[in-house]
Amino acid sequence: MRMVDLIHKKREGQELTTEEINFIIDGYSRGAIPDYQLSAFTMAVFYQGMTERETADLTLAMVESGEQIDLSKIEGIKVDKHSTGGVGDTTTLVLGPLVATAGVPVAKMSGRGLGHTGGTIDKLESIEGFHVELNNQEFIDQVNKVKLSVIGQTANLTPADKKLYALRDVTATVDSIPLIASSIMSKKIAAGADAIVLDVKTGDGAFMKTTEKSFELAKAMVDIGTLTKRNTVAVVSDMDQPLGFAVGNALEVKEAIETLKGNGPKDLEELCLVLGSHMLVLGEKAKTVEEAYQILEDIIHSGKAIETLKEFVKAQGGNPDVIDNPDLLPQAEALIDVIAEEEGFVHKIHAEEIGISAMMLGAGRETKESEIDLAVGIKLNKKVGDRVDKGDVIATLYVNNPKNVEEVKRKVLAAYTIGSEKLAERPLIFGIVT
Ligand code: URA
Ligand code: CA
Image 1 (cartoon, rainbow, N blue to C red):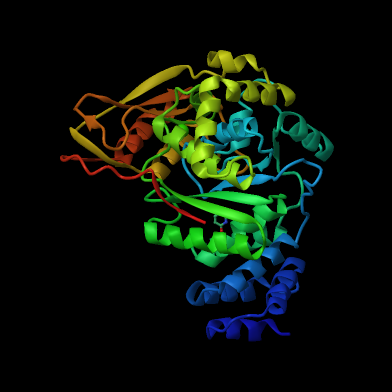
Image 2 (tube, helix red, strand yellow):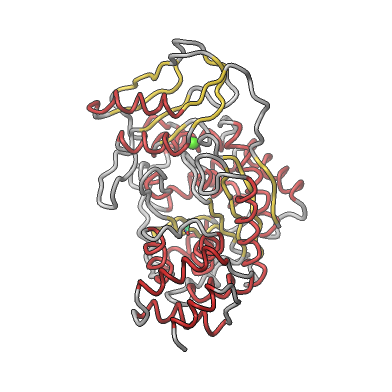
């Protein structure tokens, strides 16, 4: 087999065989096929697409390029959840304790934040003492005991995807649906998921700006799930504004605690209830999503989710007192308001710009090596649909190092689109693909 022939075949829009796809990923992983041939190949895929079968084969080839986590010692169906990248997306912190309380085991490998997106591990580390360095046995034991554990990615998962993603990043081939879908699904499958719930973001702040493209991506991932025998459900949800009010590590932990107590932002709570309901059905803890939704609402209102959160935090060395008293979380020295300069109604809040603003305050990493400040971030005071008057507080900056505050203020203000008329309400959830 010669790589040049396979590039040609894909360029002409023909379907590659399983063997051909394995040849490409295996050869690229080993360094036998050079970057320039893979970049021509990814560009051909960008224009010609891939069939469902090819996309599933590509996914499995990437899974096999590295280690695969064996979660078979954990009782029950392991349902993983993935979001295609939100800002202020605190759903994992809420969903973990919520579905664990309902009996679905959550064995999650998570990442640190980079750029404008936050990472679940950074957020959890704002709880004093909390650590994510568990070995495999400790990880499995904890999930069997408290139904929930979150650890850092230690194993060498999907190295072919890492290499390919880096190449796509510099060859303008990131936003190809089969390439995104296989990249995401390969990581979930390698991490040991039996079933997967996907939160596909749509809107200005998302990978996929239009609902049409977002549904296409959702369907591509669900199709991979079907072909690889991992039950998969995708929820297409709004990212025309950040989720909830808080963006920043400790701020989001506090918001997650509030949500688990039933006092959280409505959009965050609703999205968690919907994603969680599908997790319960896939985990066979409920027959229908309606039944599951009711179970999860009851869990929130009974205070049981908070108890699970405490057990989880304690099991990983964190101070559980934080949950009754969130003021024990790292606190910023100064709170600085961003003031509206015009009046009207909020039409959009550019999530990525808010994420970058939070990063500039120190909440996120510019490069992998950057140090982050867990206390800082942004709290939105106005959300889409809200009326704003000149002089109103639009958002509050939580600041420790005031040197770029004026620049961040301008950026946050610019992230808001304010119009004179009130727009029809935009849905939080656009649809479900099963
Ligand atoms: N996220 C991923 O993990 N992979 C992609 O290709 C795009 C987004
Ligand atoms: Ca939030």
